Amino acid sequence: MAISLKKGGTFNLSKKEPALKKIMIGLGWELKAGAQVDLDASVFMLGANGKLPADEFFVFYNNLKSLDGSLQHTGDNRTGAGDEDDEMILANLPAIDTRIHEILITVSIHEATARRQNFGHLGDAYIRIVDVESKREVLRYDLDAEFSNFADVEFGKLKKIDGDWTFIASGIGSNGGLQTYVNAYS
Ligand SMILES: [Ca+2]
Ligand SMILES: [Ca+2]
Image (cartoon, rainbow, N blue to C red; front, side, top):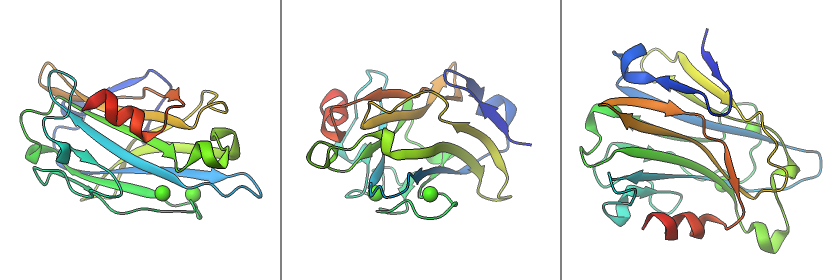
């Protein structure tokens, strides 16, 4: 059984899953009837100072691979159709640049302001971590809090705490668009 986290919950991957090397971070969502929303998953790989050590550590639909090659975004999904993961990020944990202390995963609605959209147009949304080798789901966070008034959500983050990669189900909503995150972490 996979571990199911609630908002604010944490899971020490390095301690509880020491054999884990290659992981798939899967993000899924469902649209409410009639809604047409394009969500984009993005990853910010941050140094100890909370900033991107180089632009190429920002992984998104226009930069699918991180500078160190450890992270790969599998590509843009524009509809969220289907029950499977809608956007996926593959990570090779031992290959992550030692300068990286935090890996932040956000999901934002494409052109939310122009289209007047927010997470209220969405049904279920989740983030999960799967062991690539065994295909086993290690943990999952179903976004349980209310995000209806937001167009962007930080779904979760992997943070290095005392040398261990720890997943935190942060679930923090905002409304500035992807550019606001970019400005904050550049
Ligand atoms: Ca998308
Ligand atoms: Ca879906």
